Amino acid sequence: MEAVLDKVFGDRLPLDPNAITLLSLVLSATVVAAALLGLPPLSAALLLLLSALLDALDGYVARRTGKVTSFGAFLDSTVDRASDALHTYALLLYGVLGFQAAYALLASELLVSYTRARAESLGVNLSGVGLMERGERVLAKAAALASRTVDPTAARAIAYALLALTAATVLQRVVAVARRLRAEAHLKTAGVKEHP
Image (cartoon, rainbow, N blue to C red; front, side, top):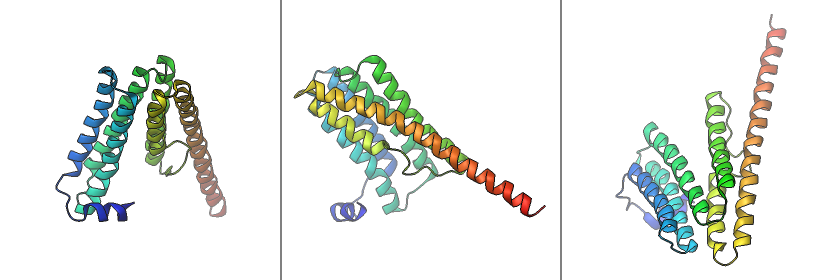
């Protein structure tokens, strides 16, 4: 992926990575604005994908320009959560999900993020664990919005599948953390027994 970005941008990277992060948030807000203005769902889907592209670009620019910072990582994670909420709100506004389902999806998304952050604070790496990480969720939301005009039933099916898989991801991560922490505790106990 980075090799492709190198060919596209080369050394022409005038924007600060944090500025790109904030711009991705602005574009996420335009997804909601599109719904409120009554624009076609396909427009919202394209705006959502554009915001996701910028979200991927900020980390690349930070690494390419040597501007990787702790605050940049913090800002990126915070903006990701806000963007997730905005995108899910757009699904509600376009009638792809009802209020209860949209609330359940948002709660599940936040728990996917929280379980990873909390696990990492305990020394457990959850990278790649779970069916629906953020990239997959973004693509599923864009697909649901894009299909809304053509086939509302298909859009709803995609969104409900997203909800189910996101909730499953939370469960997968809880199970993974439980297993790894149990294994670590077992190793420590075994070590104590071997070396009294």
